[in-house]
Amino acid sequence: MTTATPTDRDRFIFVGTGGSKILTLKFNPTTGTLTPTQTQTPSPTPSFLALHPNLPLLFAGNEVSPGTVTSFAVSCEDGTLTRVDATESGGDGPAHVAVHPEGGSVAAANYGGGSVGVVSVREDGTFVRGSLTRFKYSGSGPDKSRQESPHPHGVYFHPTQPLLLVPDLGTDQIHAHPLSFGSIAPPLLDLVVHRPGGAGPRHLAFHPSLPIAYLVDEMLNTVSALTNDPASGALTFTQSWSLLPDGAARGFDITAAEIALSKDGRFLYVSQRGHELVVVFQVSPADGSLELVQCLKLGGRQPRHFVLADAWMLVALQGSRAIQVLRVLEDGSLEAATILEGLEEEPQCLVLL
Image 1 (cartoon, rainbow, N blue to C red):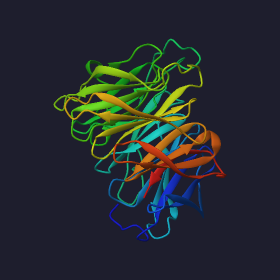
Image 2: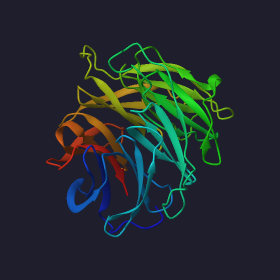
Image 3: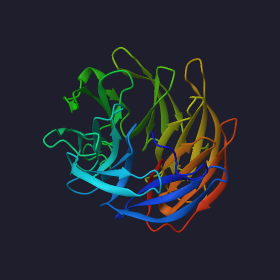
Image 4: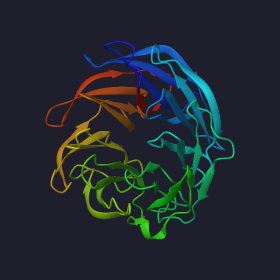
């Protein structure tokens, strides 16, 4: 953000939820403690949030039918959110939203509707009417209880090419859409990444310096390295690593969730629901291969999302209505620090101002 944080110590955390509001908390980066505030911003099922890359704007994907995206102006002084505008997301139940690195458009993965949508946005946070482009997928996967139809679960702007990448849990694919002036075209068939049947691709993370992306497969409970061709944007699978401890049970409710790299790219973190873990890998600077560092048992259930904040990690424990704060050590490993329990809503996404 271009505006300084409100004090030398506290930072604001915006919490996307499965309820009817966005929560605002204060985070003390010296002590690692979270403090509730009185600020609660109405929004219909704001399950995923994203900040504008350089303006004080927050976007919420509202997981309703039909799906919507709402924009809010952010006060960097007191963390207040002021509703600016709302628009359709291009399908039902958006589960993930992302803002283009240049800030001119917002993409939404409509999990419930099996589609992706991109809409243009102005610098004041208002959406450009009539600018929505969308694409509805077809197909299914072998798991008829969860893959009866397409379920796009993430949207990612390629770091070097005008492409929007969409992991689709329902069809075990990553789609690649050309982008032009804030609009998407149908996916390029020669850039589709195919995962094993029943893998359930969910989220991506691009390494900051190596030509590699990492994919978390929700249902297979694996993280995979994909070489990233900067010239074409093509992703090619190279290797996978399990997120489950040796001998750990598998089942319907044993699922991987979020993935993120440290700022320097030395460590990769993945959350795992069911066994309630954050799995830590060290990243080889030579080829991006992974070496297991730690499987940390958390103090609550369903770590759906997390955010890294310098020497800290904050984990949204959806099933416990809690947020756990972990200390990030020099070797990349984590240790429990504090936990805030008794939240009014189930936390599903965390954004740090």
